[in-house]
Image 1 (tube, one colour):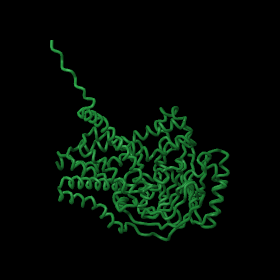
Image 2 (cartoon, one colour; image 1 turned 90 degrees about the vertical axis):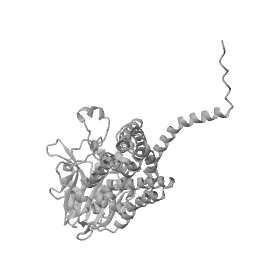
Image 3 (cartoon, one colour; image 1 turned 60 degrees about the vertical axis):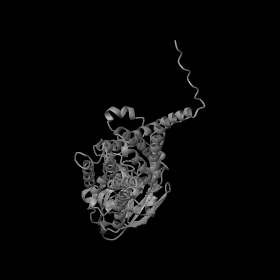
Image 4 (cartoon, one colour; image 1 turned 135 degrees about the horizontal axis):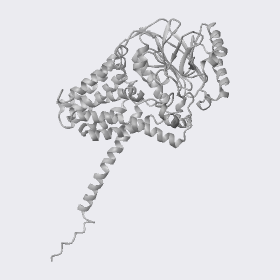
Length: 522
C-alpha cells in the first residue's frame, strides 16, 4: 500500500504568508467597513450646532452612498443601520442626562435605555438604504434619484411615526449654507432631499471622472453645483414684508437648576426671582419660559400673577407666562402658555413628549414606568386649541418646547401670526449639544415661516431670531439674565406655509416611482 506524500512545510514560504494575509483581509474587511460606516455617521454630527460645519455631510455621506451604490438591499439595510447608530448615538446621547439626573434612574439603566432608543431610531436609516436599493439595481439611478428621495422620505417619516422624533434632520445642518434659501419653499426635508441629490450627483461626477468619461463627469459635477448656485441666487428673494412697528421683547431666563425646580420649598423663591427680574425688564412684552411657575395656574393666579400683570399694565407691558393649567374638572392638566391678566388668552401644548410629558400605553406600561420620577409627566394634549394669542396689535404664534421641531404644526399659526414664540426648558439636557441643536431648529422654523421667533428658556439658549433665521441676540447657557431686544413683525406667506411638506413629499414619491425600471428610467 502506497503512503500519501508528506505535506510540505509552508511555514516560511511566501505562499503561506500570502494565504494568511488573504484570510485576515477576508475577515477584517467587513469589520473595517462597518467601523468606518459607524464612524462617518458619528462625524456627521459635526455638521450641526454648535459646530455647524455644513460641508461635513458631503464627505461622510459620500462614503455611505459609495456603499449603497452597488449593495444588495440586505447590505444596504445593515450599513444604513450602522451609519444611523453612529449618527444618532453621538448626536442625541444627551437624552441619557434627563433620564438619569432628572428621572431618578440609575446611570447604567439610563444609558441602556438611551442606547435602545438610538438603536430603534437608527432603523429609519436602514429603511432608506433598503428601499433605495430594492427599487433598482442601476447604480446611476440609485445615486441620482432613489437614494436622495428615500432619505428625504425617511426623515419625514421619522417626524411622525410613534409621535415623531425629527431631531437632526439633515436639512438643519444647512441653516448657514446657500441651501438655506430653499427653506421657505420646501422646508427642512426639502433641503435634506436637495443636499442628498447634490451629493449623489457629485459622487457620479467623481465616478465618471475616474472612468475617463470626462463629458459625463462634467455634466454631473455641474448638476451637483447647481442647487448651491440656485440657493445663492434665491438668497435675495423677499417672501414676506414688515408689518407695523418693531416690538421690544424681554425674555426672563432665571436659570433655576432643574434638580430643585419642583421642590415645594423652592416655589416662593422662584416666584420672587421672576417678579424681581420682570419688574426690571424694559420690554413692552415680557416672556417667561416653559413651566416657569412650578405650580398650577389657579394656585398662583389671584395673589401673584394678576397683581403683577396689573402692575405691568400700568406701564403698558404684557406678560406671557409658561405655567401648568389644571382643568376645572380636576382630571386633566396642560402644559400652557398664558397671557397674564387677559381672559381666554392661552395656548395648551398639543404635541407632547412621550415618556417625558405623557406615558404612552399607560394602561399597560404605567406600573412599570412609575420608577421614572419626572414631575408633571402626565400632561393632557391641548385639542383643537388655536396656536395664536392676540398681543396688542399683533398675533403671536405659540409653540412650547419640542413643538418647534415640527414645521407642519408651527405653520398652522400662519398667515395670521406676525411673529412666533417658543417657550422651552432645555435644562433637562444639561450642558450638552441639545440646547445648541434646539436653537438651530428654531432658526429653521423662523426661516421656513418668514417670521421672527422669540425663544424663551429657563437656562438657555434664549434668543431673538429674525425672519431670515439669523440670531439677533442670544443668552449664554446657565446664566441668570434678562435678554432684551427688538423684533420686526412680518406678514405674507412663504410657499412652505402655503403647501407645508406636501409638495416635497409628492416630488420625492414621484422620484422613487421614476427610479423603478418598470415605471421610469431603467
